[in-house]
Image (tube, rainbow, N blue to C red):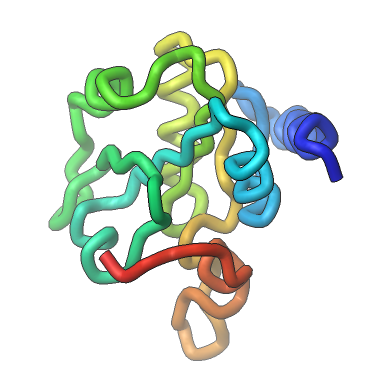
Length: 149
């Protein structure tokens, strides 16, 4: 599947979901876009504690949307994003499960980023029957590259 086809699928998915930004990608789609599109940047919006204890995607830009403990909103999120990622980039946001990355994508689109995508399922994905993450879906469950923070 070509990058153009993947992005068209993501945009169609985004329309179906009523998103206010470019679209939504599955983790394997996001990895294919990142590998094939030089201007694509993955931005991990989880907390520093999650990066340290759960793991990170190599080369992903890290900008906390909310800080641990208490998940306190980062009032400087957009400013920090703009310092690290140009508005000419294709930005792929990821969090634990896809909710914070949706919020980050909305904020980025409002700030003038034109190509913004949410990575569905997130880094850890949904909980399994034992209430553990990382096995049902998500970046890690798909076997995509990650390292311990």
